[in-house]
Image 1 (spheres, rainbow, N blue to C red):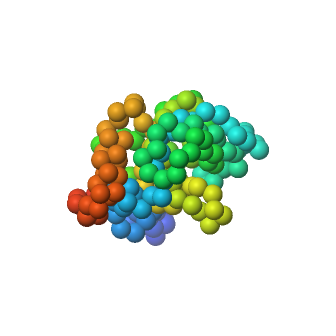
Image 2 (cartoon, one colour):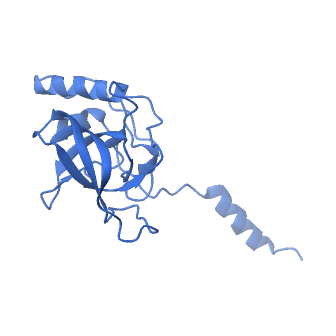
Image 3 (cartoon, rainbow, N blue to C red):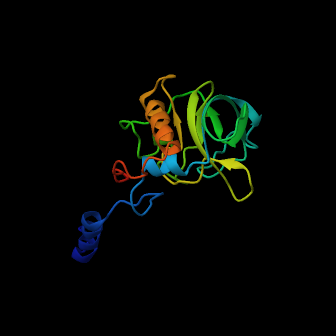
Length: 187
């Protein structure tokens, strides 16, 4: 039995005129200059262990996890001198490196859906963290949606951290915030 023409028309119309829906999107472009300039604290840190594990290890959210990760601070680029940091997140045994060319203007793959922020960290991995104080007074990386606020680093001299160090020095020295144009965010 053949479907009626009107049903077939609507099915085909839906396929032809459909557009992708993304779980997370922003208006405008993401600026790596704004990221460095506006962060209250920038640190390189190692994800060590859970300070508090997930309440249900079988159920993860794309939002803010109930579990907290302890980081050992390796380097301070900007902000207060601290030796340890605890942030919401999940520990994983796989890498999640950014697949773009530095200087990054978009979050690593783990943050491209759901809440707009990557919330997993490889145990023992190094991360460059851009922090601000949230409404509760605690430091957070969840302040600039879809931006590379918590990227995993390949090494101590990863091109991303080299660029951020240089940019942070320029800002501290009073250099203009608009030296380069931001690239548009990619869905």
